[in-house]
Image (cartoon, rainbow, N blue to C red):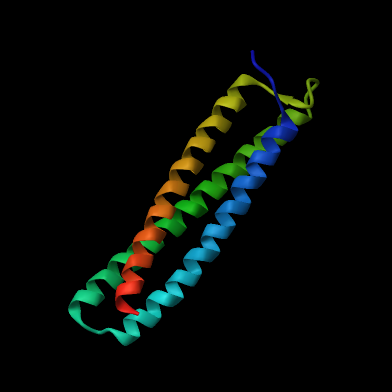
Length: 127
């Protein structure tokens, strides 16, 4: 069974968690800009887009929270593994979970980046 260093895995988890915290903060800033746009543009066209982005931001924040929770759970499992006789390495089963989390993180990063790009184009139009 393939073994991977726990410190390597922990570093990746920490990077993911810091990135998710950053994206959460970024979405908070964008929500403030969205509020400003909504106050200045009360027409139905603008409000339709405001509602769309409110929903997008809510979904992304929920996804971030869920992914953060899953990463913390995985870290807990790895911590338990570290207390075993083969301490310092995780086994293949945990590595599969780690790899799946990495894919989810990468996908979420792409979705968030796309949402931010789209929002910025919208904000440029309505600010």
